[in-house]
Length: 260
Ligand SMILES: NC(=O)c1ccc[n+]([C@@H]2O[C@H](COP(=O)([O-])OP(=O)(O)OC[C@H]3O[C@@H](n4cnc5c(N)ncnc54)[C@H](O)[C@@H]3O)[C@@H](O)[C@H]2O)c1
Image (cartoon, rainbow, N blue to C red; front, top):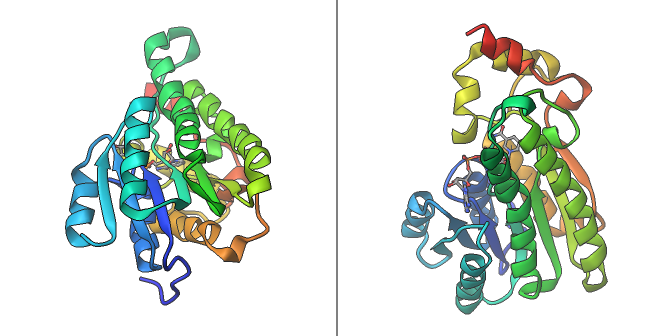
């Protein structure tokens, strides 16, 4: 809980808000006074959030890879709360596989979710975002730091980082700022597989300047800063929230996994 209320009378549209980083961002925005349109393919978490905040949360099931589904969610959100002041394109997931043996359909699935899903989120919300608003994408440390075995995810996240900068150019004339947050290792459902292997976490933490991983709330606090007027002259920025992980190297996943 924070003492500031920088988002009072604003509405935030957040994808992937049922769990992890997206859920933490939704909670943080609510604590700062925002109304939240909370979108997820798995509505369990967003429904629970709406049950706790019925006046300020609209929970919607939608698939970021499906433009029709997202258009319906955007329309439902604006019907309830009006135009969005903040959009957070957060939904995403990873996969593992060396390039020479990676199933192509699985590779395309990650590009579709992590990159095309962000494009569809930006596209469907663009005309429903208030002038002067803030758009935030969630990319990753892996947008700039490669990891063997994570080609689809790394390529998608690097794409998100550049897509964010293009969107900043296209939306700047309306005073809309577009920035990306690049988290390092965060303890969420998405990384449960990594946290099940202590050596992965050990190597990540050894390579991070701060010597530890992050909580979802530590990403959410930066997302609140970027949503607020406190970041009024930031656009097209790549905001690392990785404890200095970008100074090191990613855990050597193939060696670690083959030793299991
Ligand atoms: N956890 C980390 O270490 C980490 C690090 C860097 C970046 N990220 C990024 O942060 C974002 C959030 O990840 P997380 O760690 O909170 O994971 P998470 O699994 O806890 O949350 C992701 C949410 O996205 C939802 N989702 C999945 N596919 C969807 C779809 N097609 N449409 C709508 N919603 C969908 C899931 O149901 C889930 O609620 C992702 O983009 C991820 O790549 C995470």
